[in-house]
Image (tube, rainbow, N blue to C red; front, side, top):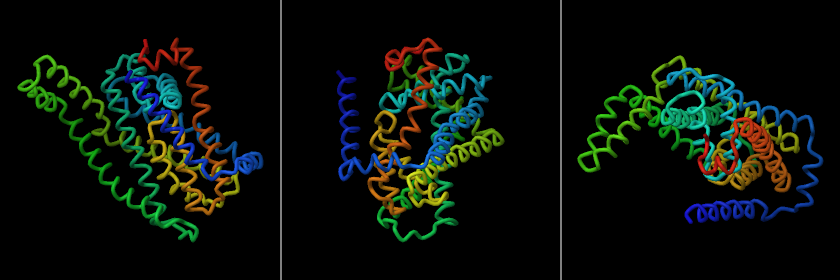
Length: 335
């Protein structure tokens, strides 16, 4: 019953966001903009957007190193499977599926591998904030067309999230350096909880902390952060080239600004960020770059398709090769 209710809520949220996205659309003009988009820019966007999976896999390889030896090809395959699953299943389910699957394939701790995904998200946040700050400080052209309310909201959000990222990294640094102490602290919970349950939780907390081991290895952490910036530069490049394909006058560095609303949009727990991604792009393109509403809608649809369709296709292929079924994956059957 709970799963049915969750599915209904997710579908309702996605439908609602799509309705908002299309509320003022002239679908004939949207279709015309898609047909007239420049193919060279579209191909560049498709290439950049999907090449990020290789870089993401390399970064994850760095983060997993303190836990044990992993094979890059396995890391890459599980990365694509995870993103493909997130595009089809609600609540970004792939973020749990891919560390579980990798840990089973490489003989690592599932809990520690899951911790590396949390570290990935903090590095992603830091990279987006770095690019947003770079745009605001050095490349902001003072766009006359921009919506000051939306721009101020993004700037305020960046100021709020920067200390959040720093605090999160500090907590990870502490946990990685004191897993045994963390185990001892959590074990004290047996004073109010059943001893067996407290022991299990304490063990999980210790293993989870060990997953942040790379935070204490500065060369690997710096390399992982550098790869994170590369990932988001490539994503930004895909946004820019898709926008240019539709004739939207967006400078290359302007795509760094677009990352902020899109990150918020994909955080909406619908499969593949459906609805949230689309509306975030439409708002950004029209608010900052004076894009025609129907043109922005067409660009959002194509850019989202570039982000999820290849991941779904290749992810499903890898699932079949791994002997997995999507319905089984949704139920947690990762054998």
